[in-house]
Image (cartoon, rainbow, N blue to C red; front, side):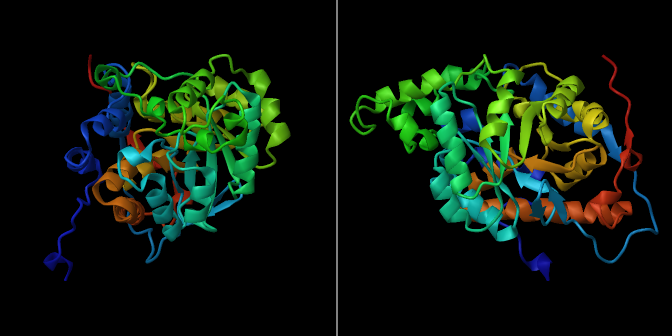
Length: 377
């Protein structure tokens, strides 16, 4: 009986952060867990989930559920992807390699960050034939950008996710107070340090002058001048689906559709960029209403549990991206920890659907939820 065995990691994914805090080094803890400014946006993300309540229905479920789906040509066992997260070696020495292996074993698509501690080629080798997407931070050097796109295509990444809410890093006191930015130590820039276009601009090899390589990265990462007029460049050089990540405003979602994008990811970067911004789940319904019949709408920011996933899907997301809980599982037990987190979330989503009267997430709608009153100021 399962009562005779207890898991090493908690099955309460909402409490996983508390367990992970003991495993993370101070610098990693300061980078992974906190958010921008006072943390108001991260709190707004969670408050938004708490306001929406599931309305269970009875005598209408079935013995089995179907969670499978297809998003922009990628077949998935469930409407779930692993969000792009950089510098995963801060959580565990295996970093992204452990994460992509766990994802591949379950068929969950992995989204590779530009700011990863492992390169495109390493991820492709570790992930095998499993589905993978590439998340681009658009560098100011277009030759490097083009090289990234070519390498991603050559190594089997099918879909491009352009992150737009981070043209520069937000105000993050936890990092500032520690004087810590891993990229300036050449950690989390493996895609750059293995890129021929990037390396060609250096006067010396990275091993001879690592500081110069870090500074060269710092010159091309901030890109606040990026505009809608730049998007045709991506269409010219990427022949697969393209999504814009970091959308909070319905009007931006309409512009994305008007510019020929295939989808958007409603996200505020997990609260890591703008302090005091709208909770991502609060932004989701308006975006889904604006463009859900034209392009794919995905969701990221604040998801912790299967019940959270249920709510995001009911409010119009076609799939959700899971972020911090994956890093917490990685910190606690490497690949096995990521596997544990994914299995827990998928199991809870399945149970939540069944207990709420659904045989598939495709039956969810806003009628599946009720919105609790906002707290008085």
